[in-house]
Image (cartoon, rainbow, N blue to C red; front, side, top):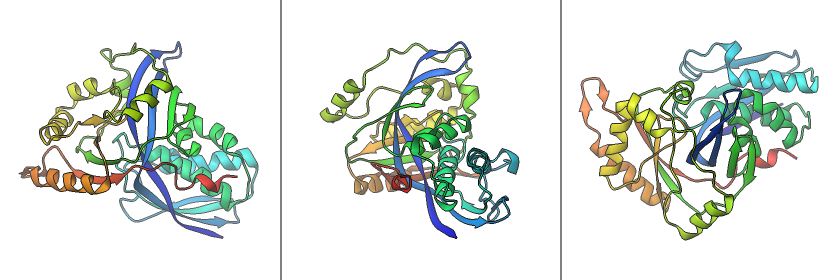
Length: 301
């Protein structure tokens, strides 16, 4: 049995507020997750010997991630352990979502693996059960299993489905790779932003007044990674309201529809200065549609 062309979508944090810190060091957040149509892609083939094997062309795997640390294989092992299944899988995947960009590529890959193998192996776990398996893999992984645009609280595991308007996004990737732990451990990170109610965010969306709130990590990232700050400035000078997603390095701007996003994508590409080592400050630009739900949402009963 095989599954082909299985998507793992990227996400944006439409805002990200750090509202506190627990005694164990984990930060308390409020954010909104939205999926976009930038995907990693997978193929899964069931094995009868219980082995989990990844394959792909050079560059398809996350850079410098050995197999024992690969979130995809870790997700598969967790599902095996939880269900006692005798099956394994041959897993082929191709990366399109940049690592270290704040787009949730690794978390999305892990969630897609849980969802797809639950289907391929016939293990029949519910969404709630898969979300419990997902959380130890990373704070963002349950959001992808949840499968809908979500208002997230706590360390990211307290999720409430929300409706979001039709929107498209220009997503910009600076060349820097940012370590999330470095940003969250910074002494100058704001950790006391006032909490907001979901109803306040919903009212803001209805009023169509642009992006809500802010990203508390942005100032720390801009101070430590001047190239990301310069990329944000380039978007601002292009008439767009730039926002960091997650801990970066990727930035995005919200547009009314995909046609507008594509126009701005081309304008940004045209303004990127060339240098001896390639593109300066911006490595890639995408025009992406915002999704209302995960493309695999209905693969879970």
